[in-house]
Length: 138
Image (cartoon, rainbow, N blue to C red):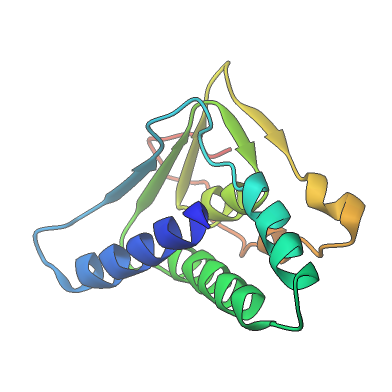
């Protein structure tokens, strides 16, 4: 699963940068037209679960995804998420916890996994103060 590797890389870097004094802000962006989109992983999870009674792949994926969502949400340094393109599923979780969220005219957002009963826990966020900020928060 492509997104699991990406999430593990993000987790490692965020944990590393958290302690570095030379990192004062983190910018998250994607290099493709799919700004933050993990829909293919839901299909891979279903396929893996249908092939046998192995819950390990799902447990690893969701534990990693939700830990990264939490890490972004509680990060001690500002995180800017630049969502320029399709932003879906776990990508919304990545974006939602960021200190500042930037969308463009190309941004399209969706949460289609609710149609299969997946509870979108990453939609819950803490209140943020909008006063004194130079950047608009979405």
